[in-house]
Length: 436
Image 1 (cartoon, rainbow, N blue to C red):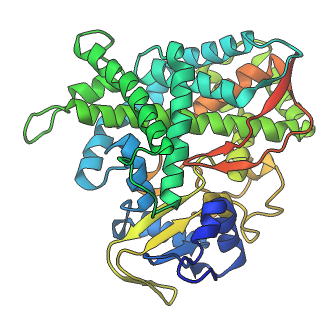
Image 2 (cartoon, helix red, strand yellow):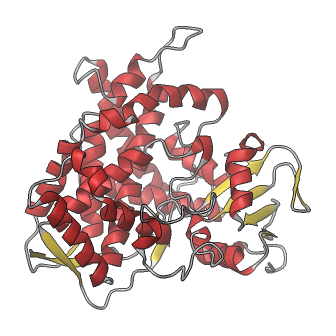
Image 3 (cartoon, rainbow, N blue to C red):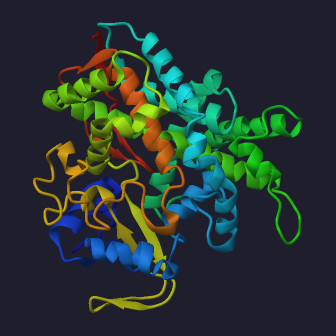
């Protein structure tokens, strides 16, 4: 790929990183250099190479990139951003909270939250369902994993998250920008947003330290964990980082997946009819339960195909630890390798008619996707710890909604992807609900 003198592709990345990464993945060789200032950068567009970086030789590819550096300003050293032995320890502590058996205790909480959300809709009145999904998934992260009621702070928290994510992607793409201590309006807005998020999360921790709350949720597990060598527990700072990570990552991604699913169903009436038929046959008008999840196969297929076209995490990056030659190309130490799930999910070699919304790709008897060609939750040991939680929440949420209402897209909208840290519909998703 070619860019402008000195700055390379940076101006185009600043304008629209999703477009640049998609072009690099679909229009060039399996491993192409991205001309950028200061750093060696490469784009991987072959699932085999993606698997090599994320799985086969993952020790040589770490998260010490500018993007993760920016993310640490909000998430600290939590599960998404930490590395090495510290990450392994934190993962072991958190893993039991996401075991499939524990999810059965969450099913009723999930369906209740989505039912109450639908109860608040006025048939015939347009509203932004993307915003509704942000609120309900934020509520569910609070109730299921942290045993905290954050509904009273939902709007404040949602606004703060948006400001923070916009700032982080801006700083990632503008390496020569002013640091946060310079009191620009953008920096002041970010710091205020971070303070609001910290206040909510630290408030949860303080409340639990004082003896309030259960002893079986994720926060309790984190607080009770002890270092096997020193016997020390987590500091408030460590707890803050893990809770902030779960708080943000645990709702933003699922909300976006559901928003894009509504968009795709609104444009695909045949798919929606088949989905509703499954809901009628499996549920017969009753509220879904965890026991219904395995039976809602087509619902799962719809969600998987939605996340193929619009993966919530649209870009991944790793830094090379030691020089390595792949396919005749040497990746030098400290080079950055990028992978774009949004584009990888559209490779014609691996996906027939890749732009089409076709849930049959994920039918039980269909051939599984090539390893490395489909990674909505990443892959390898750093695969998202909450992938099953997110899928169950999305399945139960979609089933709870669509057996009760039909959602029509308000005409005249453009559904442009906004590549922040996650992939949001830029202008939201305006719909009108009508009772079935």
